[in-house]
Image (cartoon, rainbow, N blue to C red; front, side, top):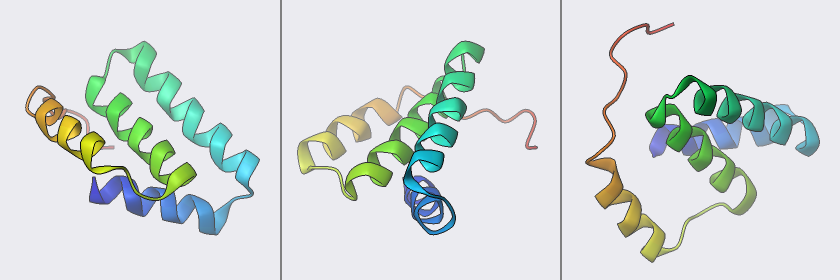
Length: 78
């Protein structure tokens, strides 16, 4: 989740809001249609952090439980 926060902060610093949201949503969409659940969760977190800053405690707990079921992609590291 730390990486998602960093990417969200970088999006705030580099892009106008509409451009940042479009870039995040395109990345999320590509991950979704590629069937990459770990990337889908990552980009969803980036968007959540971009839009609101911090997640509530209940959401943090749900993500912690969900994280156990996501296997990171160890293939292409490009």
